[in-house]
Image 1 (tube, one colour):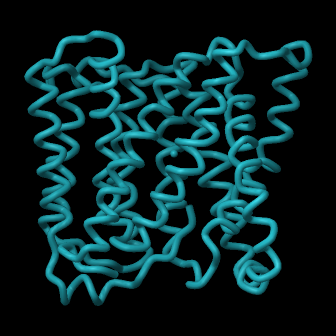
Image 2 (image 1 turned 60 degrees about the horizontal axis):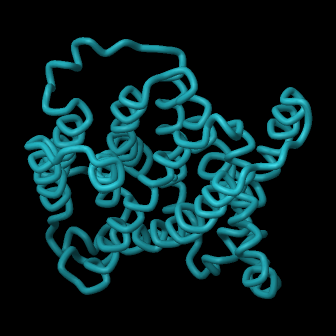
Length: 315
């Protein structure tokens, strides 16, 4: 694993920032078109487009990657189920029965899940600065979501959809940490293609049932189809490739703090695209998030070198 100040680490951090920017648009667009397409149709269609993008590149490489695929097929199956099949699908279903604010607040527990599960499963000892950085970033995210009124947490109401958001966060933590267990040398494009296939197989029965209950297939409008194409290419293929490459460089623990950038980027998109005002809590929240990420990413070179390297493929 690279030390924090190396060029490869700096590139990984940039990739993580870009990934969170793309994933934040995923939530905005998904909320915008949820009335035109069901949650399972959205998830299945999104990953189908991503799979179609990868097949022309991944299939010619499949034979060469087959030995490594066969050697760890159980791990790849689990990664496909948790990372592709469940995480975003659970969020898409959840936002139908919970508020966007609740979803963002509860989704902020995901980085903590990554750290806790990582420390339990990998026996990885976390430094105080990592916990402090994570707490600072969490405070910044909540400051933005609650519009500067942190006491608003006292009015938080729990709904059935909130459980799905927490379940989605747990699935993502399992996926993120599961990447660390893979053997090195696997072609990232082939691996991503395989994970997408697993996710699509899992989603197919739910998609068919949803379509049947809606009275059959219906043509999507041009704007909705454009949004679906965007989701299938940018937050799916490009973002996943960048995320997994970044984890291979800096590890899951350091990457977890960057997840707090999603609500921050979502707020910035509301300002730029919807004309909302830039408030003090946007600036303060962003400053806290980036400070927390910086604090949690600082590490001694020797300590970082002792941590196991993470291999990954391409929310």
